[in-house]
Amino acid sequence: MAKPIQYVADGMVVAREVSEQKILRLKKEIKTRTKTMPVRQKTYKNIAIFMALTVLFYLLGYWLIYRLQKATPLMMSVGFAAIVTCWIGNIKISELGWRWFRHKEQILSYLIPLGVISLAYGLVWALGFGGFYDEAYVGELREGYSLGNWSDAGLLGFHFALTATITFALTLPSVLGEEIAWRGFLVQQLSTIVSPQKTALISGALWTSFHFPLIFLGLYGVDGPPLYYQLICFSLYLMSASVIMTYLRLKTGSLWTAVIFHMSSNIFIQKFFAKVTLENAHTPWMGDEFGLIPGLVMLVVAVFFYRKLDTVSA
Image 1: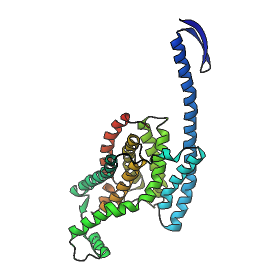
Image 2: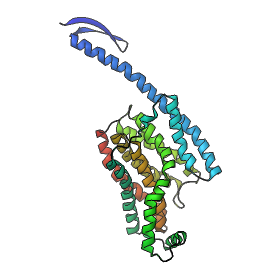
Image 3: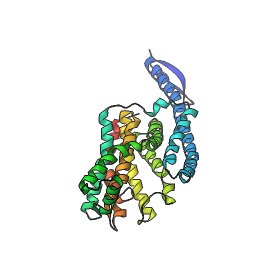
């Protein structure tokens, strides 16, 4: 039976004739709003604390680079910031995405960067922006591995196998330190207040800017191209990678997809393809994370996954 009522909604008095069913629906909606607002406010607070701690720990990690001559403390500093934020904000560490999920997505996370980088350097070599392969570097490998009788092809194959397995595994501590923060903590927090697309772009922008001080100071980058060019190409590569990693993280709920993707990207571009390429004047402009071609190829793949972000949620 309909009846006139007065009900307070968002500070205003609502007066109208409504059915009992509509009354219940209105009460439920207001109750949902009152619950949602504190959650959003808490999320913003968590992100603000995380960013403040990231700056603090980043400075400590930067100091340790010079003390230890390694970048690992800097990469892990942001992970410590995320863990301390969880402690302050009463966030369970289990919410960072430790479950493995299915092997299929983990294998995909390994193969996508390998495929992107292989195609990118195939284009670099085919278009004459670099050569395959640097005989002097292969000579260094022969001496370093003490495999004097091996052919160049055999040495390159052996080096690729070691890079894809042993070197890959050795990067776990530093990469995990980063990914606990960016895809473990930040993506999870952002996905509760903004769309998956915005989550990918915001987290990607923050992740990219995390590297900028090292580039500005000349500790990370290549010789030749101007700083602005390197920043543009590097940002293109990482922002595109962020879209793919965010999709895999939200689809699976697993932090490990991002860890594996990040490890695969680092070791194949830095430890294999950039090393074996015979450089010419064009190579620094077109290869590596600071050149144009890897970023463009990653962007093409990212567009595909960006369109799929609508199908995933936290």
